[in-house]
Length: 386
Image 1 (cartoon, rainbow, N blue to C red):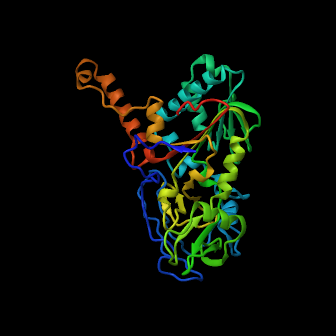
Image 2: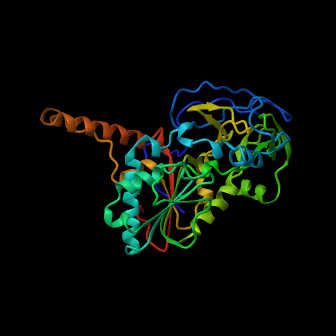
Image 3: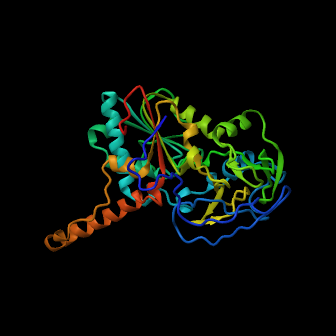
């Protein structure tokens, strides 16, 4: 794996904007602690970095015993009445896909580069993992040249039911297709792959955090086995003190390796808010989100539950990590303001160009969407972004 942050304004890769709030465990010892929390975020913006705390509450969930966060999140998000099984993600948070059509246009450009590297196969696959309601695929289909679109096999991978009105060319399925040639793209998917949470004791040992559906937590037994090995390799405690937290990313690693493994040839990309070994957060990043606002991550089915991704742990040996700002710039996205002379000669064109520049600037902003990280992993081809 290699990293290229040479043209990033900020070397950090954990770049969500929004609210931050105290974490359970900062002041509480072992035992149950509902902790602080709130529903005081601003309106629509990217899901924020940081933990919003826990509160005792009841809700949609019927899963009331103490269990690990991975099991609780799986039930809350993807159970029979899970949050993502009944809610459109775009109604609750805004990703790059929703911010500007230029994002889909950049993915279309990347797809064309992959197509050329593969020798223009028929069919050419575009697999959107964590497709939401198919917005990215719709945007890419609209942006592709006809010669590529006619050969395209667009596949949406999503556990929720197919939405009405989706382009009939799009295949909708719960798992990625096997043995395809093309581009696999996962925009803000891995952050919603459930994982367990660990918290350190006074000796620096990680304990599994247990949680109820109402958000009440308690410390469980020490983390052992493969999860302990993952923490030792990828998230060792920065200091020996109680209350540090970490998300155990092994399920994300496994999910990503399986996704990459579906490609016979092409490129796999995971775009997400992330951290690497050089900047792991001390208190984890587990966060809830609902109606455009940061909320406590309560696993009762009432909200999104998300955590930043240790993308360096997911990456294979040929992978390249890039800030989204760098990746999109290489694909032709630019936030340059149009010249003022255009306002005098063609005012309508100037306004269109100014609006496009504003959209691009949001996608490229180092402290916002531009600070997301792209994990790019080629299979049998050279990396088109390398």
